[in-house]
Image 1 (cartoon, rainbow, N blue to C red):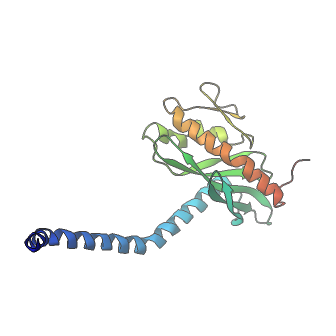
Image 2 (tube, rainbow, N blue to C red):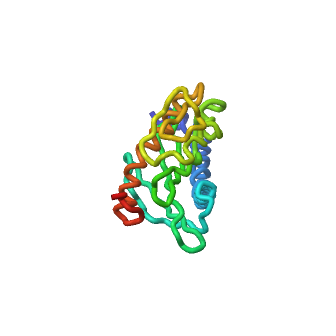
Length: 202
């Protein structure tokens, strides 16, 4: 028995030590880079929010850790030079064709209309699902009513309303974006009303 253990150790010690060192190296690298990665993600988020809310002079967290669809999000408030609210933005996610899709979605100061969306992270099929970022599709959300949206397979994409024309060949990804919007908007609007950041329209 001892001979077998000795033989096993002689044959595998280099592999075991190498695996341990490699794992340790990965852990050290992840720890060293995690702060930089997080900073880059935050910078990308703020950059996209400013692209969506073009008259924003400053962006601040208005509501943190809002539970939506089993996840938490933060609602950001955009203000202009006179500290007047010009819009709100939040990160939203949902299942796409390949993996999770992460979006930053913006609405106007009254949460009446969408100001559009930007893709933060996606693993959709190149040339198909990635077209959710293309102007044909994404421009349909700019000015659309901030409520439940409907995906249609055909129609005039230049008409801005609650109907969004799907991307040909990427219906699943198109539907995924709609579902993300619809999962978040009512909860976000209710919370903004609850916090007194917008009126309830009554």
